[in-house]
Image (cartoon, rainbow, N blue to C red; front, side):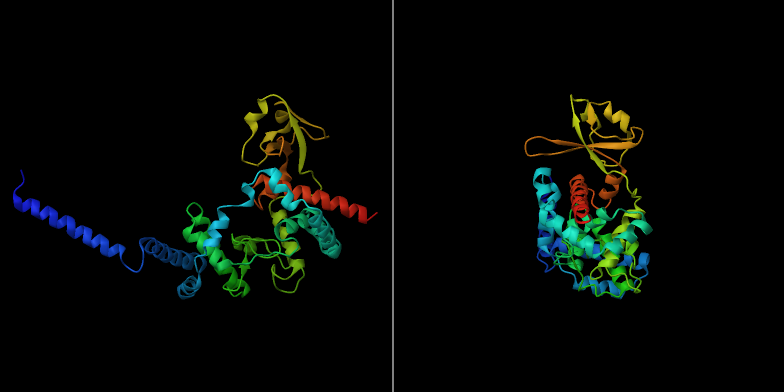
Amino acid sequence: MLPFAYIFLGYALYYMFKALLFSFLSLSIPFSSWAVNQTNDEFIAQTAEKYKLPVTRIKHWLDQANKDQTVLDAMAKPWEAKPWHQYAPIFLTEKRTQAGVKFWQKHRLTLDRVEKELGVDAAIVVAIIGVETLYGYYKGKYSALDSLYTLGFYHKSRGKFFRKELAELMVLAEDEQFSVTDIKSSYAGAMGWGQFMPSSYRYYAVDFDGDGKRDLFNNEVDAIGSVGNYFKKHRWQFGQPVAFKARVTGNEHKAILSRNLKPKRIISDILSQGVFVNADINTQDKGHLIKLKGATEDEYWLTLQNFYVISRYNHSPLYSMAVYQLSEAIKAEMAKHDE
C-alpha cells in the first residue's frame, strides 16, 4: 500500500487539476471560440503573406465578420440533395423559359459576341444566368463576408475551401475597390448575376463592355461575357452536343455508373454495357453514363464533354442537367420567335 502522504498528494493534484480545468472552461471565451481565434491568427498571417495584404486590414475585416447560423442551416440542406424529380421542377418552368427568351432578345448583340469571340453557345450562357439568379431577380441576400467567414471557420468539412474564398473576397474588394462589408451573396458566398465565387470573379470576370470595370453585380454585359469566359476557359465545345437520353437493359451498366462526371470511357464501350441511345453519335468520342432519380422510374443519360464543362460551374449532375434542359427549352422558344 502507498503511504498516506502519497495518497494525500494524489488527491491534491487531482482536485488542483479539476479546479484549473473548471476555471478554463469558465472563461468568457469558450473553448470553441479559442480554437477559432487560433485559426484567425493563422488565416491573417497566411493571407497577408500570400496576397500581400496589410495585416491590419485583414484583421479589421475579420473583426467585422459575424457567424450566421442561417448560413450553416442552408448549407446543410442544399437543393442538390433532392432527387431529380423534385429538383427539376424548381428550374424547368415556363416562367424561367420565357424570362430567358426576353433576356436573350434584350442582349442579342452581346450574346452574338460571346459566340463569335469566345466560342460559347448563347443558349448555355442564358440558361446559367437563369438558373443562378432568374436573370438578376435573386442575386443573394446574405453578407458575403459573414457567409464565407461562417463557412470558413465553422463548417466541419469544407472550412479550408471557404477560408480560401474568404481571402479571395478580400483581395477582390481591394482590387476592384468594393466595400467588403457591403457585398451581398448567396449563403455559400456566390455573387452577382452569374453567382461567381470570389476566386472565379477574380480569375474569370471580364470587362465585356469596355468601361474599365469588371462589374458582375450591376452590369449585365459584363456578367454575360464573364459567364462566357468561364466556359471558354473550361474548354466548352461550340455547337457540340451535351447529353443524350439513354435506356438500359440488364445489369452490366451498373458497373460504369460513378459520381465522377468527367467523360473517360469510349462511347462504344459504354454502349456495349446494355446502354442504348437513339441518336447519331461518334462512338469513338468519350462519354459518361449517369442515372437520375425519377418519380416512377430512373432516367439514364449519356453525357459528353460539354456536360462536364457545365459541371465545373456546379459539380452536381442535377445542376448540369437542369442547365442543359433549360438551355434547350429557351433555344426552342427563341426559334419560334425568330420564325
